[in-house]
Amino acid sequence: MFITERHRPSELLHMEAMFSRSKLDDKNHNQLENLRRGYEGECIYDNIFNEVGHDNSYIYRDVYLNIEDSTTQYDSLIVTEEGVVVNEIKNFSGTYTVSDDSWAKGNFELPDDPFAQLRRAIGKMRRLSLSSDLQFKVSGKLIFPNEECTLIIADESLKQNIIIRSNLRRYLARFKNSFSGNFAREICEVITEHIVVNPYFKSAVDFDDVRHGIYCSECAGFEVDSERFHFRCSSCGSYETKETHFVRAISDYKYLFGKLPMTTNRMMEFTNYKFSKRSVQRLLAKYCDREGIYKSTSYKFKYYDFEDAMSKQPRNIRYKDRID
Ligand SMILES: [Zn+2]
Image 1 (spheres, rainbow, N blue to C red):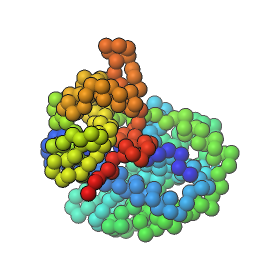
Image 2: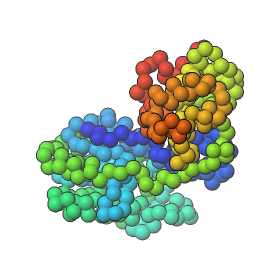
Image 3: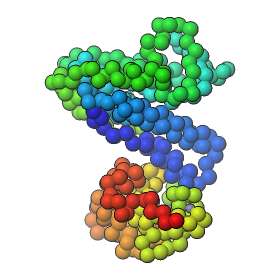
């Protein structure tokens, strides 16, 4: 069973908010595409795991673990009575030539060697195993979930660390036959104790460096007409509730401005005064936790991101309220 949820990574949420509210240069655009592709690969993996079933194992997705004073990110950790299996998910597409120490796509050699990444991730997990006294076994695989990915591997021995898409279902189905009892639960306790918030996400822009206002989720236009409970997009005509727009703005704020405190006045400015002060106060109180007192009151978003907040609301304020 899945122990942790998988969300869009912070860096992806930052870049998506930047994409909606500013002009990205080519470098940032490529970065956004890479982040999106990475996340899509992880979702394919999750979907296949869901289809084959995972009742007999514990699965941590997208966790950061602090082990011996450094933090390692794991795409997926599968815990059973046998120990821990690390899965590093690589959503590569195209044809790659793979040798022990280099990966090349045509003439382009990848700057990061996926085998080295996997070895580091496994090594850290082994350190956790040793320091915990449980001495659980650790192994790992590189997972390639994209159907359009071809790997040319001359050295047969390297293949044992790789799962390509056509073998993925069979590979994940094997965990259905595993057993997870007390020992697996003890391993999970150790892993859970070491989970930390992503310490690498530091991207932030200045408040005035991005476009203020609210934008249509269908066509990305910023021109909207205010109706009683909805904003109607002037370009494509789609409707979204005002509350939905406001939650999207809170989420963008969280991932754009780093430590800049979120206040009533700043949210009014950020949404380009499309909401009354009373509405802003009411919605901040609903979706955020208050910090500080009186004049220095600021707010912290209660949810991971927009999708997370929306998935936990009743149907009537959700975002797909298109009226044709
Ligand atoms: Zn629109």
